[in-house]
Length: 72
Image (cartoon, rainbow, N blue to C red; front, side, top):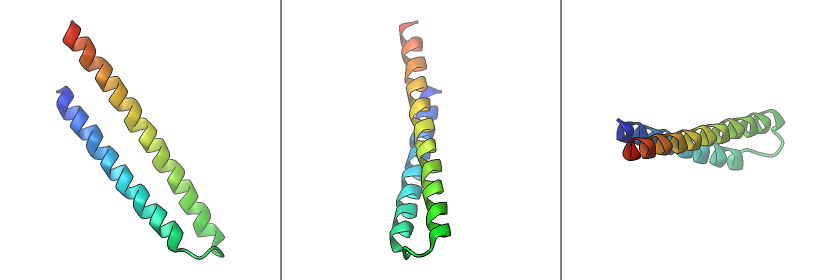
């Protein structure tokens, strides 16, 4: 069960990384004069960073439960 959750967390992390790379490339391609779009992209980057943090916390908690079950 723990392995399935870990694989799912890794999959979510990969999706978040690819999404961040796409958003970063779009931000580089846009002209500097479009303030509303640039602001929206920055907010989207912050959301992706929050997703990274949630995945990291999930992996840490999963590892803790795994260690608890091994030493039980």
